[in-house]
Image 1: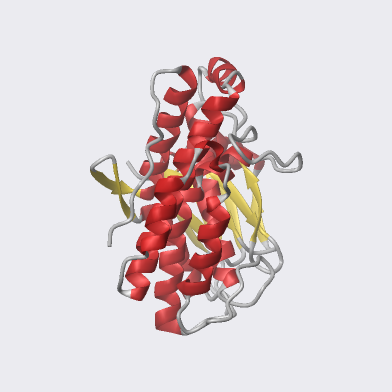
Image 2: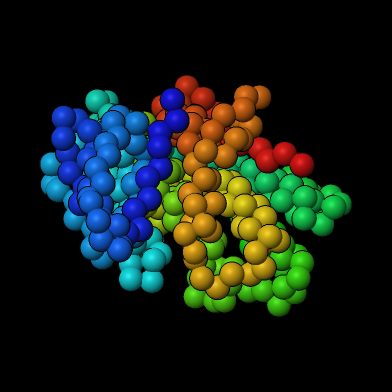
Length: 304
């Protein structure tokens, strides 16, 4: 069952009551306080995006016990923090060891597969945007070597971002640049939480990456594994921009569209399922690679 993604962008009091998330909110114009409840086991991600949200410790503990990812947002309404359980699986120690003992050649092969899948999905996004196959991207995806030693990821990215937003020929993909960078940042932050949650639930350590290794990054593995999933966010942002122009403000409506990424229907290993479930399938395939039971990562493939 796909878990729910909950977004709170107005004052609220969130507490635990009889294994339910109890939400108490008062309308801006005053009036009676509304109270509603949601079963804890139905929740996968919670986004807290208002300075006047109060959440109890008992509720946080209950959310983590069900492997829910809790995301906090900064004053500019962009995700700034991620809270995950410390013990996401009963065999966590054994799986940590398998991950820690993964050889360098194995990690390089896994990164090769990751970049191949990423460039393939980027090529499909471009085909959907431009109306014709991105033959150079397809060729680059096939030329990726172990560890992406020739850095084809960067070459593909340069071409991809230069052509993705047709009506913005001077677009620069940087975190602090102009729209639609803010939309991409928001979507990627949510995607990162979904992937990190899937890794923790599988019993893997999200800090230890197969490629990323920044000592200040607590989610290197999540940043690795989310790479082939990024084009799903990109395609959604392109659709929003085609309908809304290039919004510089993340309205509630736009956030709602971006929050839908967890429920996007994707194809993985010949099956169609919501992106959140596909993330769990990818995490499971990664574990099998670490334990020697498998050789390939399962990644979703975008459709034309």
